[in-house]
Image (tube, rainbow, N blue to C red; front, top):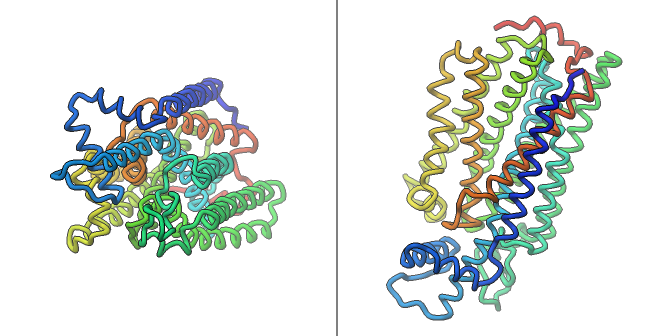
Length: 450
C-alpha cells in the first residue's frame, strides 16, 4: 500500500491555506463602488492610458464608443460601471480558471482511462491505479465548480453577460437581440440543470468504473471486466456529446456573440494533453518512491508519446480556428481574436502557443528523450503551464477585459486548487493497492517493452 508522504501532505495543506488567504484577499480588495474605480484610475500613472483602457473594455463588451467624441456624463458613468464589474469579476475569474482546469484534468484522465478499457489495452494496466487516483478529484472539483456556477446563476458576479438584467427584455436598455435569439438555450434554469447533468455523469461513471476495477482485484471475475468494458464505451460516447455542450455553456457563453464549431474540440484537446501529462508526472513520482515496481521506461515512453501527439492535436485545432479568422475575416471571429492578437492578451496568447506546440515538438520529437524521467517531468511542467495560460486566455478577456493582472488573487486561487488536487489524488491512492492484479491483461502490462 502506498503511504502519503508527510512532506507532500504538509506541502499540499500549506498551499490550500495560503491559497484560501489569497482568494479571500482578492474578494476583500475587489472594488465595491464606482468611487473605488475612480480612485484606482486617479492613481494610474497616466490618466490618458487609463481612459483608453476603459474605452477599449467597453468596446469589447459590445457598447459602441467613439474616442473622438466627448464623453457625456451618462457615458462616463457607464464606463465606470463596466470597469467596476470587471474589477469585481477578477477574484471570480481567478477562482474559475483553476477550478475548471483541475476538474477537467481529472475528467479527461477518466476519459483516457475509459479508452484503455474500451480498447482492451494491455500496456497501461500498471497505470490504472494512478489514473483512478487522479480521477478521485472529480467529486470535490465538481462541488467547487458547481458552487461557482450557482453563484453566477444567482447574480453574485457579472461573469456571464447574458445573465444581466434586461438582456432578454425588448423594453430594456440592456436588451440584446443576438443573445435573445439564443434564449431557448441560454437561460439560467436550463444552464444550471445542464451543468448538474455534466457533473453528475462524470461522477457516477467514475464511481462505477473504479468500484468495478477494485472488485476485479478481489474476485478476478471476467464478468466484471466485461462490465467495465461496456461502461467505458458508454462513457466515451456520453462524454463526446456532453463536452460539446459543456464547452459552450461554461466557456463560450462568456462571450455569447461569438461562436465556433471547433471550440469544443479545441478545449478538449487542451485539457486532454494536460490530463495525460499529469498521469506521466504522478507515475514518475510514484515510481521514484518505489510504489510502481512494474512501470518501466517503455510505459514512460508511451505516456510521453501521447503528450507529444496530443500537443500536435491541440495545435491543429488552434491553427484551424486562427486560419478561418485570418483568411475570411469573419466579424464574430475577429471580435474574439482582436484582444488576443493585438490587444492586451497578445503575450499570453502567443506565449502559450510556444509552450504548447513549439516547445513540445522540439523536445519530445526524439524517442530517446521520452525515456528520461527528469526530461519528461521538465517538459510536462512546461506543458501544464502553457495549457493553464490557454485556459486563462479563453476566460479572462470576456470577464475582466484589459483589467487583467497576475497578482495575489490569481496566485492564491492557483495555489489552493493545486494543493487540493495534490491532497485528494495522493490520499486516494492510499486506499487501495497500486497494483491492479485482478485485471486479465496485467501480465502483458508487467512485461511490456517497446
